[in-house]
View 1 (cartoon, one colour):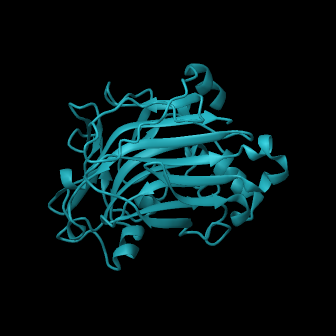
View 2: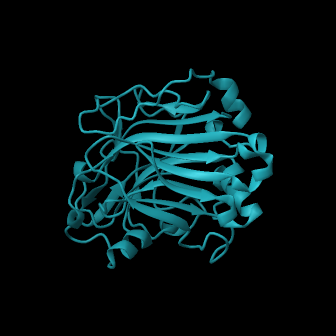
View 3: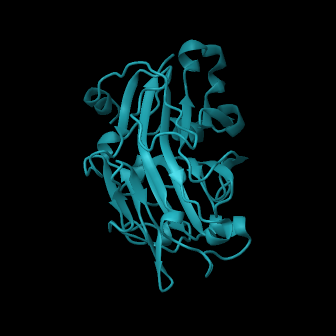
Length: 313
């Protein structure tokens, strides 16, 4: 699929990626190749709606044959109703969780198989999204769990192979906590090289709400090509508005097969807003959501664009 993606999309011009991180930024900007990247593997600015060629809706409370509640304990039902997921007049995607008499609905989409992407040895791949989080208060957001993430595309049709297929959580926002949560899942569970079921992760106080921000992850495997003597220094780096938040190096994982799966396996991207589950419960120290938790615009995830780019420099 990596080869197909490259043949479908032309090389992009080297240009400075729009930071679009402050309150005065435009609602919608045109995505461009970040500096150091020369190939666009995937890009969608939602100006033509939610394309079935690019995105698949995940529906219900699990994959067919997958673990219940999506394996996380989340309580919402995913739908494709316009009240839960739609594009706005500004050409952005908006995922909105809603509650009706205690029953929650929301939405989740994943990229289609034709857009699976990989990071080969000697390459660097960057996945990024320009997005905005809702402004409900923390007490009104207990259980609200928006996310931008990637997972090994071998999950399709075989929903019991996690976490061995590898997962990179680019951004998770929990309970309107100001921190960015970034995590890698891999290997065996429970335990294993990624300390499952928690994963290996980091959290940083770097996230604003109600403003546009660029969230990105870079998988860097160029050392095989540029610095072969330092082959163990492959890395994954997370950014908020182009400011480095966390770096995970191969030597820190210390498991060759697990690392190869995380960085090298074909991947798909996902966008969703979950409600409740083990992660929000753990952060809150209580069961979520509560009677005070609100849905609607204040709990929504709005996305201007998503892009995946590759380069060797």
